[in-house]
Length: 296
Image (cartoon, rainbow, N blue to C red; front, side):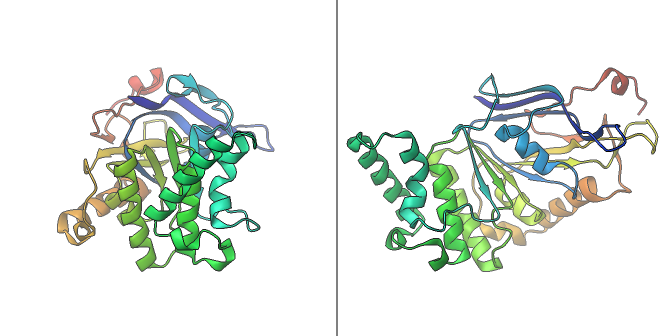
């Protein structure tokens, strides 16, 4: 079941000299329900821009972007997001933070519906081991606990796709690995569709069932002076289900990390636009008329 679909999407921004600055260049992507996609790429490649387009904070300059075959439109509950900086209300308790979104939609006189949502919120908080902290305020929690609240805050609205923007970047290594394992458990249990942005290649290769690399480092015979936006230069199928953290010690895992580093992050390693590493069965790259006529 197709959840997210990009086709021929460009995104550019105006500059003071009047010439548009191209960030995303004819991007294609299809994500199906239940996929855990991890997204990496060098600084400035457009990862944040991609998330803003999916959220509906911005619109493509060209091309189409749909969620369940409908135009993405303005932000709504079909898309949840968790940021690196915990998006919690400091004046609300843990439980109040989780209920803020659902209660906003349910009139105060619909007590039964509110009680059902509250019960569900408590169940989710118990799953992430926060049942004893529901009355605490964010400043009374550790970083990892705050991030668990932020994840449940996003999950309770049952979004079609959960976007995560460097959610574990500020955590210490031990807490980060715990959160990785917890997220995999939630993903499997709730059949979530996740797009997870990270700068940590090991994290990306461990978590994802599918690895996406967005990069501006590629070649297409247009010369070095030609302005290029980023494309998906790698789209690999990884695990089909959650794996143990022990996989990180496997030599093949290390080789995978290094190959991704070379293909997406090395400005001297330029894959040709017709030879990208797109081995995922749903991966595709609709070349422009100019790109179709390029030489290999």
